[in-house]
Image 1 (cartoon, rainbow, N blue to C red):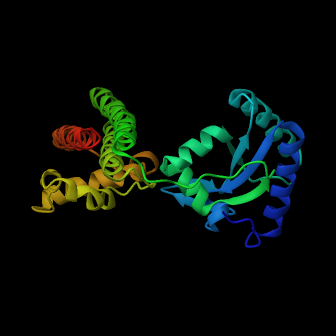
Image 2: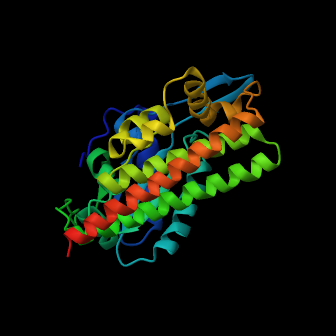
Length: 293
């Protein structure tokens, strides 16, 4: 893992030094403090203000920090980190938001050893801001098929349930005549079905909201996926494009119009995606299970 953050502007270096000092003052048995996310990658946004469909919006990247402790209750550590937040924001020049997550070193090393994608990405891209020197981070090892079965089942259950939640909300918004919101719900359902497919087959994932790219990354798992969202005729292509755009447009563009008929046309497609996702994922998980016997 990297230890240098020389690529960061001076204000960020100063902020992070303050935050590390505050954490060490307040959190007992702190073993590591790791910067991850956009500031670690160098893709951060200092401040961006733009007009989104007539609405003035602003955005700035957070400091994403993983605080690793030993022999401490993670819930109690979470409360202590809240006090770090409070102290940090008392200085008026500290404007960049902080997002903390915290883990016990044994749990973190277990997740790293098992190749859990969230933590391995932190290990690859993160910057070690503080290291007590008492522990070493594990490296991902080759998993046996019992472990692969367990992980893939966990990922499937999580994403499939989340997709079902959005599908239920789409029905509710449709019944209330909120067709724009229903289109966003359907987008999120599709996104999570695609995530389930990718995670079950690879145990890896990355943030992606573009349904075109998600479909392109997962259609190899079944030819039926392309049949749900064909590119021809033009009406089919238009419906998929409406669904793709809904992630942003349905929430921020007051001129984005979705009709009752369009939602009615999209619903069976998303339900078909649900059924295919369930079938493919369960089949793949069963294959893992048999290979582990």
